[in-house]
Amino acid sequence: MEIKEAIRILELSELNSVEELKSQFYARAHELHPDKSDDPQANERFQELIAAYRVCLTNLSELFSHFDQVPSAVEEESVSAVIENLDDIFEDIFGFAKTGRVLGYREPQLVALTVEELCQGVSKEQKLTGYRSCPDCQGAGVPLGHSTKICTYCFGKGFTQKKNEQNARPKICQRCQGRGRMMSHACERCAGFGRLKEHKKYKINIPDFWVPGQVYTASGWDTKTQKPSELFLEIAVKDHPVFEIANHDLLCEYQHDFERHPEGRDVRVQTPMGIALFSIKANAKPKSIVRVAGLGRYTGKDHKARGDLVIVLKQRKHPWWQKVFKVLRRTNP
Ligand SMILES: [Zn+2]
Ligand SMILES: [Zn+2]
Image (cartoon, rainbow, N blue to C red):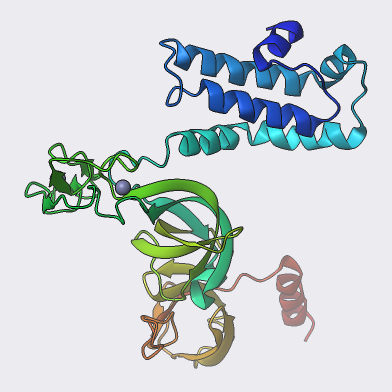
């Protein structure tokens, strides 16, 4: 696409800053969005608008010279971030223009945490999709005076999941389309889902006992308005050089010198849960497992119980020069 064509599509009449380009794009996006426009070719025109925006962003100097302007170095730098997040912007507009219509059941979103964050809990700010109750129907999904019935196919969950298939992804309920309810009249604003979908930056508090691989419901606070939304989070754990997490247990390896300490040894290790003391017994061998009860992660928010610290013993590897000294000591008593 030529820059002239892009300017025409964006309907740019003047340009002094990247901010102006951005707001003009937003304005045009709201006009052309397929959900808002009656144009039968709305979808194609919307895609064309995004392409035009991309052309402008990637040819900033050419674009500015068209309006007898020169972009500053700061502007050029800010643009690279915009290009990187173009898909996010698209999602922003999409979510907004859809007036929060939730299609299907609520998809959990992956939140990756470090071992330390999982052990100690963390407060995070992250861009996520949240759901807030529809103000028009107050979450009922139907206009005032109408009633709903629980969907008897999915028992109100909005999805079905085969029990015998391990890790089978849930399928959106065909009968209620994920609403979990059956109704004669649907609320127009939320299309009967009772909630509005928003993609925003949320502040979330992740407690110290959540388990990787599990899905949790959490409250997220919109960082701008401080209003709460419901979030569905699937917890993942990032790689750690020493520790691993298995539910509430903490796993690690320990390099033990079996030759030097044949009688066993008491060991102190620093874990993300603090200092841990454990004993290696005399009969221990490489690959032996030492399980220390109660030194793992907390199992609940009351902090009454903890999982275990599980240590796999390994033969300590000596640096080459220690071996040389050993040989020297033996040959020169
Ligand atoms: Zn509603
Ligand atoms: Zn259903």
